[in-house]
Length: 463
Image 1 (cartoon, rainbow, N blue to C red):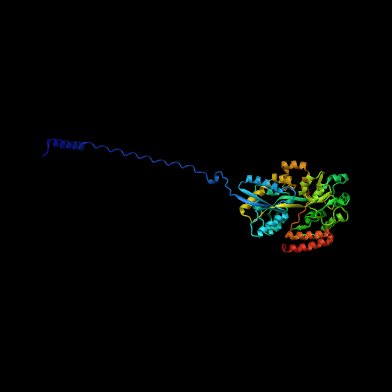
Image 2 (image 1 turned 45 degrees about the vertical axis):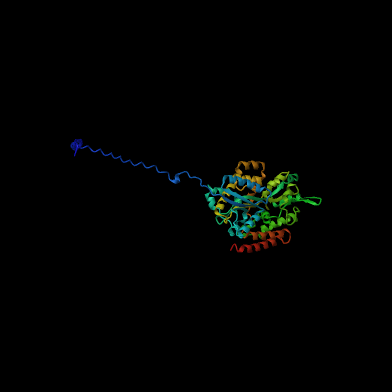
């Protein structure tokens, strides 16, 4: 049975339900206002294209290359070059230069040839004779430099700044193959004090040259102080000024020699006459290249024919005024000389990155300040005209005017002997020239034989 209390509870529930049914509907809660769509954020300003950003220096891979360098001269070449290498490596920290110093130019070329023939890798850079150009090209040893020069700012002006007499042996077949650096010329050194004491002027022709040498030759007991010493080391090189002074160089081009030209024969005869007719210098072949500079500096001879590269050593030893001039020519007021020395070559058998690094070294060393410094410290002729405008060089030539005389001798220079198959052609000429000097053949006979053999040696290279 239901209790009254339970009845009251049920009744209350029914009343609440009835009231709820009669209440106005409760408005639905408004839906939350949709958040306004965010405006599209303005696109960020486009980053500058990579090529517009400042370019960063790429990290360079370390590279090491060798340079073969001849040192068979009086100057401390190795010490000087090592100093330049330190300067270079301070500027190009990723490049290491390993110098390999050899005796002479021939030693450098032989070492490279031996390396290549043995299947080894050659050095990237070498200083070899400027006249070795054709042999090096024919052997496919060297790389042309035109691409490197094209990348140099004002590349044409860079090349044009080299003295023309030195640059002549650098080009072939419209390509540039080497850069002049260690260059020289044949000059005549004379004891100016000795000339003044004898009342003589520097010679201006073959005749006055021979007469001065004769007048300055003196006998002291069993010893003879010669008026002139004319070494036979590098026979063709020291002879060429005589031929040029007679009016005919010993070659016309890389395929044509003119050893039997009458002017060349006359020059050979003049050399012989300096001893045979004038008694002014030793007879025959003079194997005195390494000693004549000391003889001259000590006053034992009045004149010597030698390289401009000996200037510094002579000036350091001599206690008299040293005169420097080109060789007197046959005719009055004519003079002659011939350039010499070595150029930088890049070897194509080296790795490309080594060749590229080697070019940077060449470009560095051919800056005017280094060209001037090398000339000042060695006696070699500065190879670039702009080197003479440097403060260091102007101060040097003010103190040592002979340095300008060696450069100015080049105004009278002819081309140095440089032909196809040079080694054989040069040996042929040396052989017959010395036979004439020693009286084994007449000048005409020797030069005719030299011409015939040289033409045969050139035949296969110059069809």
